[in-house]
Every structure is written in C-alpha cells, then in structure tokens.
Length: 354
Image (cartoon, rainbow, N blue to C red):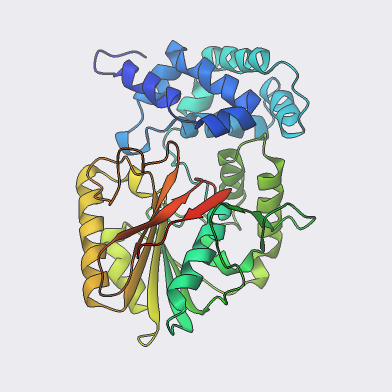
C-alpha cells in the first residue's frame, strides 16, 4: 500500500492533533485509539491515501465504527462496551481495534470514498444564541441556509431545548454558557430551511442513517440517543429543501427559495476545512460581498487556524486552544468575531464586539 508519494508524517500529525485535551479527558477509549492509530503504519497509510479535503482521522474512526455497527465479530463487542462505559482497559481495547485494522485494512479502505458527516446537532445550541441576538433588531422571520448540511439536522436549530444540565429529554442540548447569554430571547420564525451539500444524506435511507451513527463517538451515548430521537421525530418537523452541489454552485439557488422580505441567515459549521484553499477563499469573499450588499447575515463556526480563511483572530492568546471561532457578519457590515465555542456545542463564550 505504501507509496513514495504518501506523506506519512502529515498523517501522523493529523492523528496527533485530531482531539482537544478536553476530548482526551472525556473519551478514554477513543483517546487511546487515536494515539494507537497515530503510531501505526497501516493507519498512517490509509489516512495519507485520502483526498486532501477529507484527510481527517474522524473518517478512519467512522469507518471502524461502521464495521462494528454492521456486526464485525471482534469490533462489535468492543464498541458496544464503549457505548455503555464498560471498557476497563482502554489501551488494550485500542490495540485490539488496531490489530483488526492491520489484519483487515479493507474495512477502512473501502469506506474512504465517503465524507465525514457528523451533522452535530449540538451546534444548534450555538446557532440558537447567535440567531436570537441577530434577530432582535426586528427580524421576526428568516430564511435559513445551511452550507454542508449533510442530513439537514441543523436546519432544525429551533427544535432543540437548550439546558445547562442534562435532563430526561434525548433532544436536549447541554451547553455551558461561560459568559452571559440570554436564552429567553425569542427565536425568529423560519420561512424556509434550505441545505447545500455535494453528497447529502437522507434519514430515510438505512445506509445513510448507519453512516451518521458511525460518525458519532461510541463513548457519547447521549449523542447516539439524540440521533435516534431525531430520526424518530423528523417526519413531524417542517419540510426542508436540500440542494445537491457545492456552495459555489447552489448558494444563489438557495437564496432564491427564500422570502424576499425576510433576513437570509447562512450558517456553516466545520465545513470550510473540507474545501480546497481556493474554494475557502472564494466562499469567504462571496459571503462578505453578499452580506455587504444584500439582506444576508452569516454565522460561521470554524477552526481559527485554517489556511486562507481570513478571520479577526487566528493566533496569540485570543485564539483559544481547541476552540471554534464564532464569526458573525451582519447585513451591511464586515465579519467580526463574536466569541468561541466547543466544536460540538458543549460550551459557549460570547464576546460581543462593541
């Protein structure tokens, strides 16, 4: 499998930096597995073979999880124990998984054509807070466009209760507000909900549902239970439109589907990292121009360290390690940083500009 063209050191670094310290503390099995993959030659080669836009260790993790969900005799019991917190030797379990990978690399290789599509609804806790603030000056209704929508779950940002602590409702999003956030502000009505994705998933299709489950982390049963609840209730929620294609191809179509008198709200979360560098620049510049000239607002939740992604803070003390930058562009204005959040919406620290 190895080729002189493969950058194995790049693959190793991607495994090494894939998790935040917070993730390593919360996920003993996945933390041990990520470290085992980092030092494994087969795992490095598999990741190095992935097209650069999807060269994400989460793709390898998802492919292994998918094999477990499909009933692999060795992987299934390990991942089942991980889901219910029954693994007592995370390093040993991780070694077992890597041994399977070395014996059956096709379990991962055959799935590397896919894209990581976690479609994390926890980010809706962030979108709720920011959209409520943007809507306050008089936007009672909005057109919502989700770039990189996958199965369109965050098009339902307003369907999830947000709490500081967990409760019995599987749809509840638990978010710790580290700064003052008024969660009582009303959310606007949503006139249209439109997603854009080159390879959208359909919750009605079994293989798509299984892939969404595989992209979640087995040590977080709450997230898996939430996906089950969303799948069960999706048919009773408002209709959405998902446009197949790139944002460059379909953003104009998506905007045209909205109500002309309503504010169009474009959101994206951990999507731009999968664009080419040229496409990153083009998308950023296009959104800045649309917000400057039209009734459009933009909320971007992305890593602050992407190459060719201009932001107001990409280095120094203000760039919180492992955090996601909350970048907001209001109609007629330029992009401004509104704070930081956890990449799965577990906490939010709004730092509104003056």
